[in-house]
Amino acid sequence: MLSLEHIRNLCSGGISISEPLAAMTSFRIGGPVDILVEPASTEELTQLVRYFRSVDVSYVVLGNGSNILISDEGIRGVAINIEKHFSDVAIDGDVITAGAGVRLSKFVDFCVRHRLAGSEMLAGIPGTLGGAVIMNAGAYGGEISDHLLDVTVLREGDVKTLTKEKAGFRYRSSDLRSDIVISARFRFPEGDEEQLRARRKELLLKRNAAQPVNWPNAGSIFKNPEGSYAAKLIEESGLKGHRIGGAQVSELHANFIINTGGATAADVLKMIGHVRRSVHAQTGVMLELEILLLGFSADALASLN
Image (tube, rainbow, N blue to C red):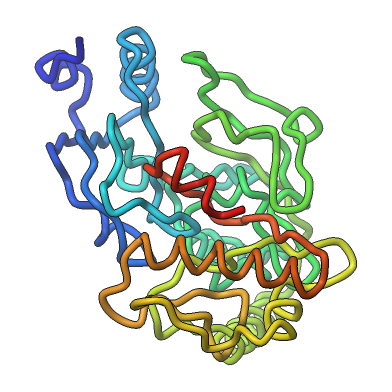
C-alpha cells in the first residue's frame, strides 16, 4: 500500500495531494492527479520510482505539460514534476549538458550565447528538454537528436547513460518512451552569435505567424504521414475551424486543436477521433497521434478509431 509518509521521507522537493493539473498543461485542460511529487535530485527521483514500482503504483512524468492531453478525470497514481529541480545547463569545452527540466527556449538561448549552431529550430517549441528528447522534437528540417551525444535516463529503477545510437531516435519518437530522461549531452558546431540570433528570430516569427500561439494548445496533434503533411490532409478534408464544444481545429494551422475557452478533454478527444475518421474516409490515411494521452480509459481511447 502506498504510504504518504514514506514518500515524504524520500522527497524533499515538494508533495501535493489531489493537485489540479489543468494549469500545468499548455492545453489548460485536465483533472487532478492523486499525488504530485517534485524530486530535488536524481537520487530522490530514483528512490521514488523504485518505491512506486515496489508497491505497484503507476506514475507519469510532467515537464511543463506541453504535447499532452490529460483526461477530465485526471490521473490515478503519481505525477512526477521534473521541471523545477532538473533545469541546469552547463558547458564544458564544446559539450553542453542540460537537465530534462530545462525549457527549450532557455536551452536555445544558452546555445546562442555560447555561439553554438544547430538548436535554433527549437526556438518557440513549448516544452522541456526531457520530453523533446523522448519525442525527438524538431522543426524546419532539424531534430533535437541531430547533435545529441548521449542521454542519461532512469530505466526500470536504474540510472543508465545511452549513446545516441542506443536511444533509437526516429521521426518524432525514440526508444525512450518508457524511460525518464534525467539529462542529455550535446556537441554543436561553432557559429556566429549575430547570425544565430537573427536565425532564431526569423524562425520564431515564422512559427508565430503560422501557428495559433495565442490560444491554449498542445502543439501538433498528429505526426506527418510519409510523403505528406497532417495539416494539409485535415484542411483538404474540410475540417479547418470545425468545433466540438470548446475545442476547435485551428483556422490558422489545421494540425492544431485549440482550447477556445472551457474546452474539456472529452471535447478534444472527440475532435481527435472525428479528424482521424474524416481524414481516413477522404484520403485513406489514418493519422497517428503525436501528443500523449494521459488518464483515459481503454473505452475512451478505443473511440479514436
